[in-house]
Length: 480
Image (cartoon, rainbow, N blue to C red):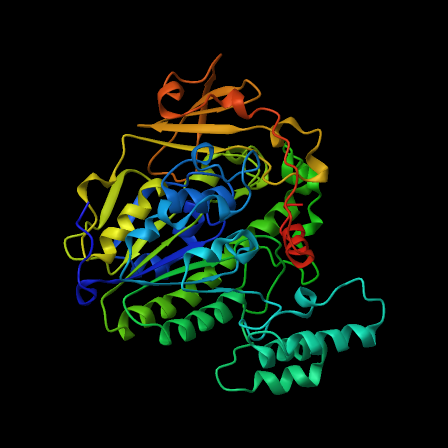
């Protein structure tokens, strides 16, 4: 890698954007603006895990979940991963800033420790620097008057008291919402991506260059409902339809459930619309980042994992409770990379190498020729993510899963003793064809992993100690 310690004037701003849950094939079809804006595309990028917490830790550390330990089997927050063990420690001249709508990538899980300035975005807030009433008031207070009095009293001791009070007014009083939305610099129209991008603009404007900006957009993550900022879809989704209409069994069971095909179509349509909305929203935001900065600015857009949409190749499941190709194969495009970077990279690449790549960009070095891999790996140490009440007796949600890609062959094996071989077509993203079942994992597991997959059988997650607000958000996202 290039030597570090270059003068700040020679450094680039680097922006890293996660589009949470966006799979490669849907990105290719529904994000044409971002694809056209990109100068470099990594066509065969694989995420290192199937859900956000271990994927973010793998990005930061360059290691798999069983190595960095941030998983249901080990530590469940980023407190277990110090800054010195992340690529961010190699950006000493950069201001490190972040805006994230992902609960796992927030202060609730100690993700903010890596940044000089970090904002956890919430769609329930008008002012992102302020707090929500539910964050600072004891829910056990039984009187509404006493709760509001406690809210006002506690708000005044917050770092941003007026913004916290404003959030309270905005969330409860219709007239106050109208008045507050008229303030300069306040954005209330559009979806979360619109408001989150505006928050990031304000953060960047007030940050010294060079900077490293991390962002995680959750717009393509369920739950879904039809939004007035969505485009017209082919299925004419009813206004009252909600993704929670799909029963849990249909989401997490690898069976066709033909009687729920219309609901699947609605889900896919709203998922596609969410990516289209991200595409329309991020294209001008990225142009602004590149065009208005004093330093050259490189922007990376990818996903922490993809999404199963109930197709046969997705094992008929919906969400990200497995490790099929639709979960692992993610988009990865780069806008305004340093000179001499290639336009297209067809070799396998992994998020495990992205930290090194971002450091190269920060030091004005192009995509290195060595970025491709002959083999890539991924794993989840609990296929269902955090322990849920509906997953207690479902073996395929309580298992660990690993995957290896080698040429056009893919192996998938789990802690329940299953191992399968697939073929993948580089020209058909997220598609996989079953070849055969095997009696044991490939021999490479013994050298590529520090522990056999059986080590992680029967994972019992004891739960996560988070605030009531965070717990509610995780439940809304389907993790609890």
